[in-house]
Image (cartoon, rainbow, N blue to C red; front, side, top):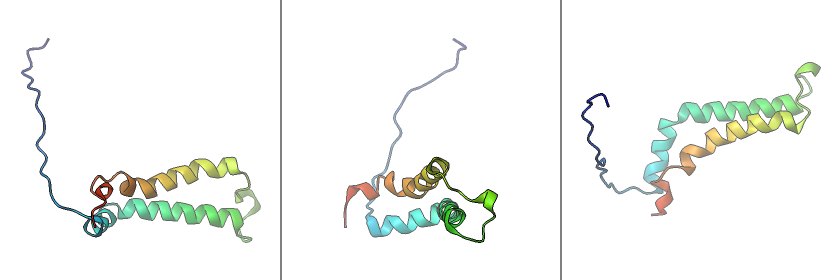
Length: 92
């Protein structure tokens, strides 16, 4: 339409050997800030739900208030591991 030369092709992927013990340290190093955020959010939710020193207006009482943040924190914690194709090969 605009005379843009477009060529469709496949990207070449190189197969490299990997297993669980090689891949987990890589994931931990790459996603350290995401894991820190998730753990901090989970700890904050637990503290705000159970600690007696929290002001009354900050206390989380309802499950409806916990569910969205717990889903986001849990997803950010699990997805780098669960969606890593090198970890899904189950090679030891």
